[in-house]
Length: 134
Image 1: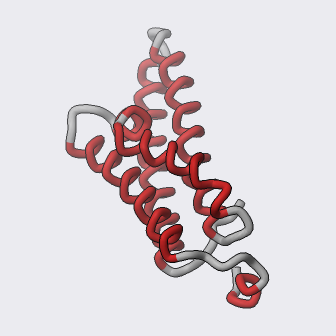
Image 2: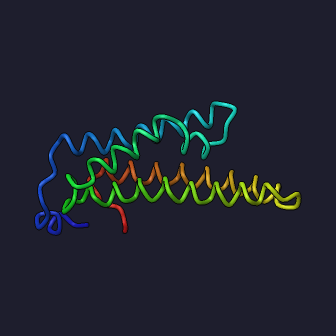
């Protein structure tokens, strides 16, 4: 999104910008717990209190960022959470079959890398003042 496009939008308050950084920080903390702890990245991302607080903040404050470039970041964060849940459910179903255990493990690791990528990409874009693709 160019600076020209951003002038047509509602202004972004410093508080909402800080909140969006906080949500990335909370999700990032969950990923870090997954990397350093005995659990997988995606299980701590979905069940860790930082990510749950982050998603609640996304939904509670989403109306405040409507019409701003931060709305794209909120959507990015929310979609990352729910798609991660979807992939975890699929991995659990695969794990329930003897043949699917290996695929489930690959899916869990792949999704963990995908979550990490999305958090880094989103946070970098936020730091540079750019919107995320919808």
